[in-house]
Image (cartoon, rainbow, N blue to C red; front, side, top):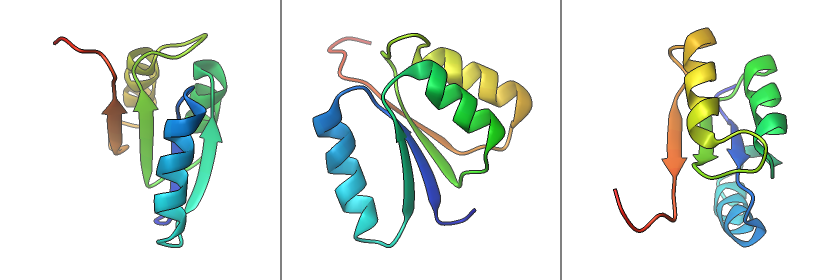
Length: 86
């Protein structure tokens, strides 16, 4: 589990950039481009870290974060956003 990260990001260029950099560290990476698939994987598998885009098709990254927190309160999560305002 310590070397497994889930990336949920619909922008494939951003996902590839993250994946390439983490792969150089020998980290096992799983990627999903839509929120529902990412949520299902986050709930049913063990990851050292979730990297979630905020704006995703089907289920938002914020909703994924809320649902994961309910079932796995200790899960490490990093949120990504391209929004230009708070």
